[in-house]
Image (cartoon, rainbow, N blue to C red; front, top):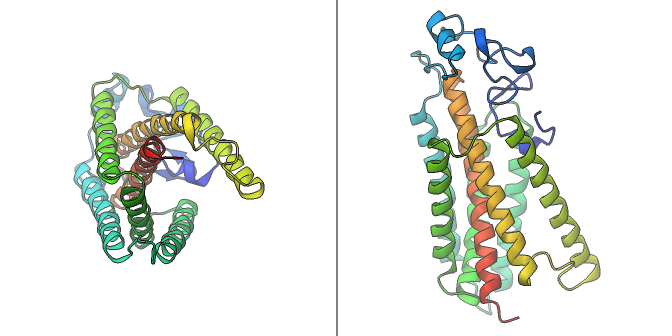
Length: 295
């Protein structure tokens, strides 16, 4: 069930191409769907714990093993705060140091695009790596922050005053809403949900790429998927997809802790959550820009 796309498949703590949340869903007796065992069983004292196996048989996730070197929720929160903090700091610096007035907008925009390309490369490199690299993840956050700082400044100062704060509040609202819905059990993340989200995301990205190619080679706005009423529609679709990815991120964190994932895997959770929040923020920013555009 796991996507072969390295960017999509980063949503899951992997060991030998296994996924603790979907490909290794616990069944009675501790075995996994597709006969794949818990990828973290080696060195995990809960792997053969009869009480943990009894919990699995009753559908409850096992308690996280009380051993050092295992990922905890505190680890995830700390790594995510570090990653998002790096992004926010560099975004604020880019906003302050790269003005977007008539005399400097081309230079600032060029620097922002360059930072975006570097961040994209770093994200792909991390996605292809089998283990989390804190240096890569924090570097990605830093360059992505520069891009978002410049982009947000352009939209806020030249298109819609207050757009950046509105996009931040919208992103926070989506995050909080999905977290509440997930914890309340209103969102059930299973194989079917995972497959649907992956298929929808790949279709969405394919449409955006086609639109971009038409815009580059045909001029204008391409097929019009990112402006006007269609742009608003696809922006809302993008936000909904981002919300689905947040649910997948919460599931991978929950399963990683339950299965006793190594502590370093918390960086993968931080990476996934940061990518998702950036996605949602940019979709909000795009919708606000469209709604306030005079074109």
